[in-house]
Amino acid sequence: MFPWGPLTPGCTDVPSAPHNSDMRCSVVFGCKVECNQGFAAPNGKSSFELKCRDRVWEDRFNEFNGEIPHCQALCNPPCQNRGICMGPNQCHCPGNFEGPLCEIEKAHPCLSRPPTPRGARVYCNQTSCQVNCMPHHQFPNGETETKLTCMDGKWRIEGTESGQVDNCDRK
Image (cartoon, rainbow, N blue to C red; front, side, top):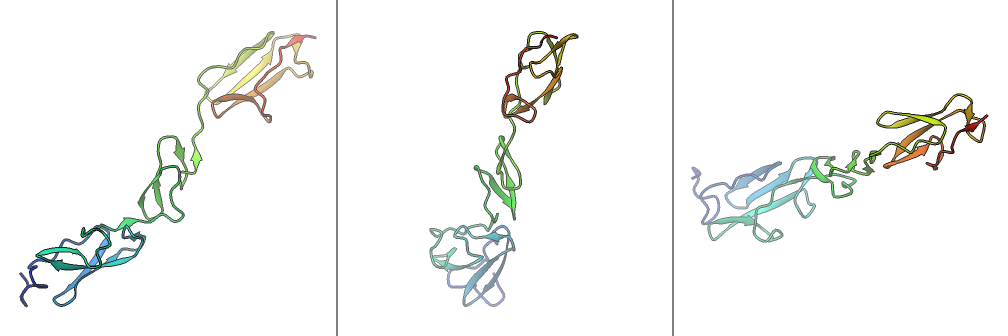
């Protein structure tokens, strides 16, 4: 109870301040909620008012179906690909996306080694493979080695879109 009496007719206690906000209340006008910087009410506004009706605090203009909403983090531009705005301009991305706005699809790993061309040996790590022709062998272009890189779950000859490595033929 306030020393000057009830806050507004029917309400004797101040409502809990919504998350991420500052709230000021008066006997006559009820409460005004100001969302912290980087936060907003569900309707996108930075402030809203509360009033007491039938001994219950609710939003003054019934914008939130009588409920007292919490101020939610704003991400501008908004998170993409079903990312969730966790704090001002901080997106939490679903498992297959990354980046500040969840705008980058994570690379898919290559789950198996590339096929070994005839007359060659293949040496791989997680993201690339080196294809070396055996002694006295070469690719049709005269080279004796080429590098493959894993891109979106597929092996590609470095610098091209092709993943098909020719066989090594005898010189």
